Length: 334
Image (cartoon, rainbow, N blue to C red; front, side, top):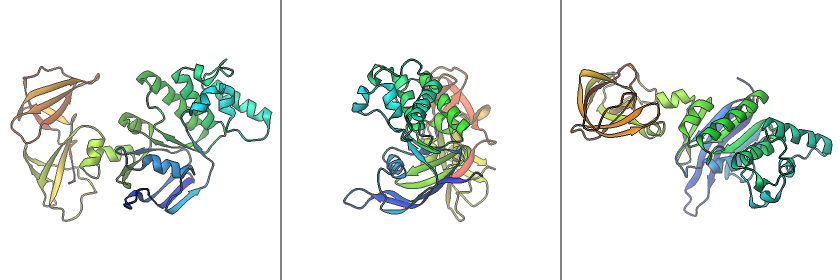
């Protein structure tokens, strides 16, 4: 593991008069070159945490050990639109050497493909060019850690993918560590090597993206990582479960399940069903096209509908017989 560049110990912050914390005893560390995504529902303290790490706000308690230079990606302020691209990118370059600053500005313009735009006003640039300019300004001082709050929001899908690839190519090449807030599940899964899931001001779960996806700490985390079906069952510590859709023997079990737990969830993600003539007979009630697959809502007298994804196109009203794919489903805490 590479050296730690940013370390947070017991960070807490309270805003309202009722004393309800925005952040509660947050601790984690970020290593050189690491990509860390900050996930969770809106209003759980993610942006507040970034502001504290950047030095814009102070915590009520705890420590932030900044062992390297920290950069913060910012959006455009109204006053920025009257600046030229050259002035905007150079605004945070404080080396005292005008030639060095000019050369660094040109490096950023070249990398972000903003040729011949340096004398244009920021208001004259396209949305994609403005977003690239924001990245160029944040990265121009060569931070070793960059903090980003939903950096690719409000971009169309093609432009988002293009700029995202550019940014992470640059960051990887310079071995820059990244902490970024995102609500984009695909972005978190594919572009981070570590996830912090915040809920109610706490780090509810942290680990590799695969760990949070496969073995979420509870149903709330499970649903955040994509559509899934949760079936409660009494539990005796074995792999046997008795649910409303049947009895099953499950071999995959989350380490988050506490010893002596009386109940567990059998979690079946939408793509973890198999069609089987001896399976559960269900009727298609809803159908939605998702590009690479169709998502179906299936019902047949159970308390909850079943969410099922398949590459095959069926029609509403058609009946299917399916079973959970027992090689993929798992038990998680209630």
